[in-house]
Image (cartoon, rainbow, N blue to C red; front, top):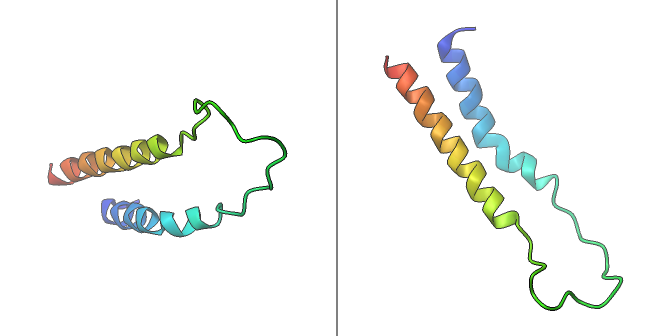
Length: 69
């Protein structure tokens, strides 16, 4: 594959990722018991999103550096 095709492919994939993420969002099931208390049962989703964003930025930087050489 040519280098230009790879860059265009991964850029398009990166830009279309939010569209694919929307497919996974659905209504949660109704609660079956009492609410979680005390608060140590918090979701960990926010941190994972930032890690994915940082990984994509790092990968983009590496691709750009490889392209510059």
